[in-house]
Image (cartoon, rainbow, N blue to C red; front, side, top):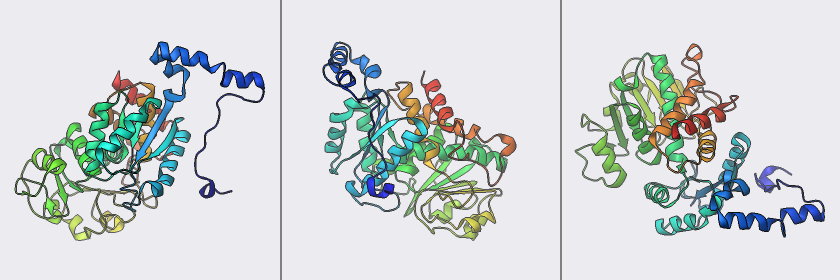
Length: 373
């Protein structure tokens, strides 16, 4: 049968159960020894149970891929796929938890109620702005790391790609002017991480234009972006603020820009047009004016794919028994990914490693655990 007919994951026993003796060790009465050990010392669960490498993949199905709000049941195939990737690429045991509620309090309660059995939580495909509060509250409530791939994973891979792309363009992150299109989960996280990594001039745009001091229609995360980014107080449309910029990062919607818009950027510009399935600007048109062009698509060079990050990051968080997710951990992961494209191999069509690069997840995991200690 094809996997589409049976799902993408299954549970398999780590111990043989083929006779009564093996049954007695795997279950009763043998399992009682582990129960007593964990009851006496909860830390023993790390050695005696699957919790040591178990990840909960949590979604409410409100922002699934480019399909939008399809609901938790329709989101299940994506969560299964994520679990399969974590198993194959990082040796982690992950399981989908598709929550039917859209109430922040109920989602947080549902996850905290079952988090005992997991070493990490991966939040996935939850719409903004609800995802920001859910992530923050789970991080405060749980003693295990909470990783939101749409925020943290995207930001890591964008930073990794920009490290090498700017090297190709002969520029430095702390000297360039960046314009981000999209003020949702990805756009906010990308902006925060770029600033932490040294970017001084980042302007974020939503569908109404630049977020800045002239905008009085903002609250929550958008208000923070207006106050903490855009240091020059730029105003106007995306096209307006893009003129003269060195870097464009699009995490929004398709067909926002054309070749003339890219031509109006600074020389040797870097364009990351990541909307899926269709980028913010036609990649071929952008390539005629920019030094480096990246997309979220596998049929163009320089695919910005979260698979480069999340297996290794979660492996490192679990192995290091990390409780909190800090910007330094995200930067370390990005730098580990960038390092897998040696300077001699970098070029306009080669700014990120392939997702099947040998040792990718291990390198990212090692960077995370070393930074956490």
